[in-house]
Amino acid sequence: MGQSDLEVLIDMGFERPRAELAVKKSGGLQGALNWLEENQDKPLEELQAAAAAAAEDEEEGGPSIATLEGADAKSLLCKECGKRFRNKELASYHASKTDHTDFEESTEEIAPLTEEEKKARLEELRQKMLEKKANKALEEKEEAKRNEKIRQKSTKEVQDIKEELARKEQIKEAEKKRQEKLADIEAKKRIKDKIEADKQERKRKAEEAKAAREGRAIQAPAAPVVAASAPRAAVSHNEARLRLQLPSGNVVKTFPADTTLFEVAAQLEAENGKPVTSFSMNYPRKTFSSGVDFGQTLKEAGLVPSAVLIIK
Image 1 (cartoon, rainbow, N blue to C red):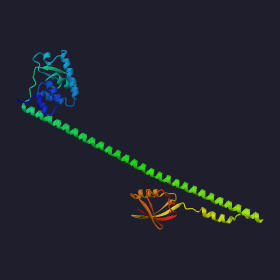
Image 2 (image 1 turned 135 degrees about the vertical axis):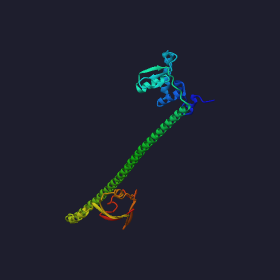
Image 3 (image 1 turned 90 degrees about the vertical axis):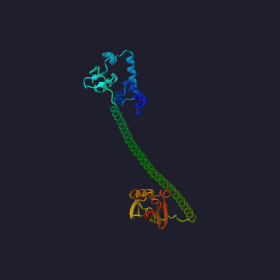
Image 4 (image 1 turned 30 degrees about the vertical axis):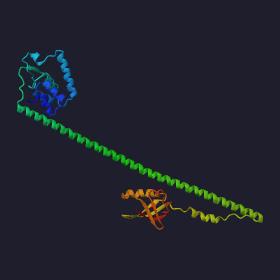
């Protein structure tokens, strides 16, 4: 027993509700194929709603082709382009697509497709469906590529921002430690100066008391010693001249004395593209390690006014 028109359409890959609508609208395989081709881009819900509305119109007494022209009316003819349609639904769809409005009923019946024509039409529809699926798959692939590029760009930008924030935080932390150490040194110096001042005051009072007992005049403190020592105390070096032994060769750089080892390492990394993990001295033998000693200034590390460092 041969397959019905509905079964043929389902075997071709059409969903059952759409195939049922096509057969119901056209009444045969040829008309169904035409209807499916013309309505392939419309959603199923829209087609079902239109079919329900047409059914209500017919129940209310809407005229059909046969009632308009009598029992001999077999088709509708578009007088503007000459196309024939099996029923008014197909004619209405044609009118919506082309804006053609001049139709007339005809007693000429649309000839059914031959077996060869049916096979050719089925193959044509299969090819169109395959082409449509292939184009859709290609569009989805291109869209996925664009989305992946956007995701990768976003991820890289976020990572760069995180790295920059971490670097700034390290510099900020190193500067904070340096300031704390400077404040500690200043506090110790003030205490030491106060102790020295108290010692000199006690010595002065003791000398005054001794002079009073001996009945002699009190001599003023010798000023030359203070005058001679003052310039020596004022001597300071504001820069450090460093000879840096790198894997690529030796370079000489000058930095302010309050520059931290972390800042020197950051500058070398920016210039050479390699991170600095430690600075070493042969004499006196000493190593400054990253994360431990890089918060020290060049002055605190004893590298002022000059030093030779081995970079690792």
